[in-house]
Length: 109
Figure 1: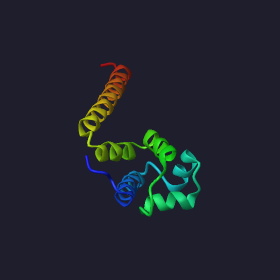
Figure 2 (figure 1 turned 90 degrees about the vertical axis):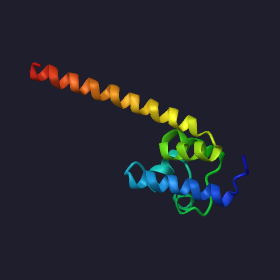
Figure 3 (figure 1 turned 45 degrees about the horizontal axis):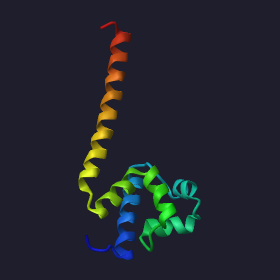
């Protein structure tokens, strides 16, 4: 696995943060609150000027699926990403089935 230079790292994390922002999941303020970093620093992460340090990166990975996926992709562990997505899909299906059963119960089916 080739080393990932700091500029590439910052760009990949920036793209992940922007995807999460476009999906309405996060904002600069939310990320600053999660990480304890100041908003100027977080803006630099979003702009790809530099990436978060280890502690901040771990908080982001824990809070933001897009960042976790970016880390997995950069590490070359693509099967892990698929596994995580399958777990998420399974959880959503279970939740949807519970909801359907609840609606059927209320309607008398």
